[in-house]
Length: 182
Length: 392
Image 1 (spheres, rainbow over the protein chains, first blue to last red):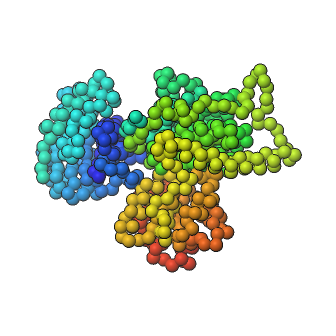
Image 2 (image 1 turned 180 degrees about the horizontal axis):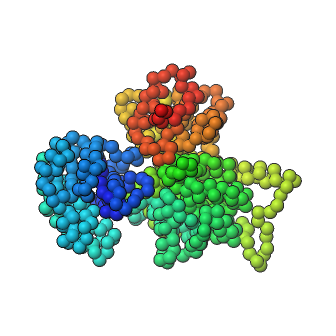
């Protein structure tokens, strides 16, 4: 089972990301959960959302405390929220930032695999908005490799209709442009 | 083929209710039920479900509206949570006394104060004696299945009682997970149109909810009690039919690795599957432990419960609500009184957990079972503890 914790700010679409990912994984025949950090959420305030993906039925319904992967949608949270809290030492950290993964590692004092991608830059270019939630799904799928990027097509189209293709293009660019430091 | 999909459970519940050929719904939105209200009203507004959605100004009005509509013979649905259910409370015994087959989804949530929107069972517990059939679900699939079955149970001529389906708020309502929708054709066959016993109609006036003083009131109360006790037969028959058609079986008391277990854990609602993981871990260490899950809360399944726990030496009852100043949590006191006259009965103790949305992890269950395994029976007997709660 892969457990992912997403960090973002209210309104940046972390919850949409976990929903799209879960729906796509389930369509691909897997088992998945996608859920927000329960409770009231305010636009701009730090929020978290969670994904679980497995090949067999997922029973556990508690929070995720030791994620395999952490995705940071907004790099301004780094240093403000302890984004690596509980992240397994052999886990993966993925940050939306133009900085290099080596810089990020140093900044966060994290020794595991770290990947960075300028998802906001990509989203701005491809969709005209600085909302990087769908773009970062591309980055995540590159790092965990549980399914093809194509598996996202149906759930993204269902959710975004005529602007779906722009989201898919941005997702693909993040998949291709991500920089990794093991 | 039934359709497997990933969907938020609250929306899946609205979809399932939309499959039930309802005539009318009156739902006042409240967290964490809101997505049921929103999605059902959307399905009706989009013409996907041919029903009347009555917008109301409070939960008291929502329940009043479904009582009136159900009286006319309509198939009706409502849903609520927490304070909304508390506001409905005044009307709940009226709905059951009038023998109206209303179906209500409850996205279980803590009650104020302090104000809290997260899950526990303290909204449903005060409704226990309202004469409603009350059933708990532990995952999205069960929420779909039970929401459909509820209409069949409620409207059956041998039942004619309102039914509430308890769906843990957030833990279930806000979870995107795999669910399978039964084929519409099979749902239509399973759930034919309602055949009301009597209807409010200007052409043929009848009185519903009449006045009764000491001359008739006690007889009415006994009749209602007999009706809900008898409903278990129909509930079992409906579950048998469901298993035949849809392949998923339901029981009033579900068990997991419970046979021959020395220690049993008993849960209700969404904690069940997390508890299964704890049982698996302890079984792998060679510990004799199992799980009992209470699905049917009213009518209380006495025989099935006694059967499930008769071989256990110790029984740990989990409550997600408090009976202040009482003999322990509400589930605990029910189980204890149900076993009072049994010759062979387990030592029983009580942990209250998950109040106001406090997370319930696998380690909570392994922790309490490990402690009970260690302690001698006399010491743990009748323990009622708020698990993991800070005291200073």
